[in-house]
Image (cartoon, rainbow, N blue to C red):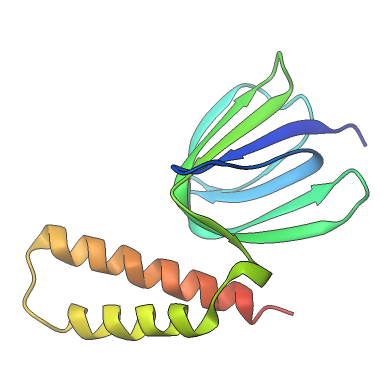
Amino acid sequence: MESFNLKIVTPEKVYAEQEIIVLVFKSSNGEFSLYAHHTDMISDVKISIISIIDKDNHLDEYAVGGGVLYFNHDSNEVKLVVNSIESKDEIDEQRALEAKVNAEKLMNGKLERRQYIEIERALQRAINRLTLKHRK
């Protein structure tokens, strides 16, 4: 299969840049699989696990903390701008578990809507990281 370029950017750095065969991600419009020469696309990326298959047919999965995806058909490349990204090996399970417990405790208190949404996202990110860490 034909490949395309993937560039993953976080607020801190360029996390990765590589040639891939397929990128699977979740947006508010559902789950998408992108292949080479996909039509131009701009999409949100939900807090979720993304899957990448590289040119050697190797599958990598990452926990992302939400973001935006841009696919440019003419250059055959996708730029994934995410709030955070971690591979299974990068996830600190103890830290993720503590974040989950803390968020759950905070959600039981009296909160303003904005605070509730922030804590709910923190909980989603923690659960997402733990899900990937325990995936076989």
